[in-house]
Amino acid sequence: MSFRIGQGIDFHKLVEGREFWLGGVLIPHSKGALGHSDADVLLHAICDALLGALSLGDIGLHFPDTDASYKGIDSKVLLQRSYQLVCEKGYILVNIDSTILLQAPKIRKYVDDMRAVIADILSVTVDDVSIKATTTEQLSFIGREEGIVATANVLLQKINIL
Image (cartoon, rainbow, N blue to C red; front, top):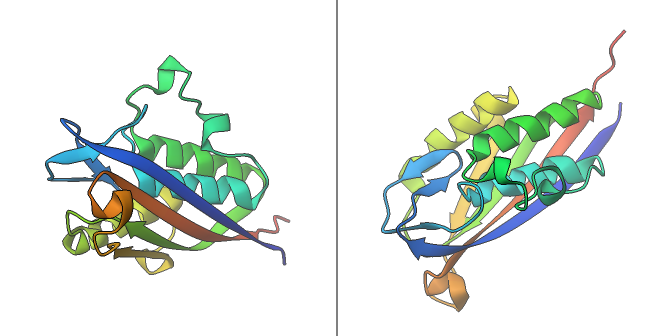
């Protein structure tokens, strides 16, 4: 049985006038992440972890911000397409462990919804999706509420099809 581990990280600037999407969930906030897509840092980090586990490059390779067709795209679509590439290589997701670094808003009450959205897209249970959050105690661009970071680690398992 073959296992592969992948790690992903994503950063986005926070600005006023943008919706704040995180883990596939719209969260009320005065700022949102700036990006070519909906700028969902958590889903982007998971995409990179999935792709990286199988040496398939990164999210920018598969969904470049120079391609107008991805302008404003829902990152749930990017996650589904990334996972499709993983499945085409004969692997399935075992679990995800992720961390979000942001000062505000507090996201604890949205985590279960995020886990459910991600689990549904990746055909796993919510118990296979871990989402943690931390502030930086008002240090750095995160602490000044100028940006957000997400990291994700995934474990993939090769499936044997007879």
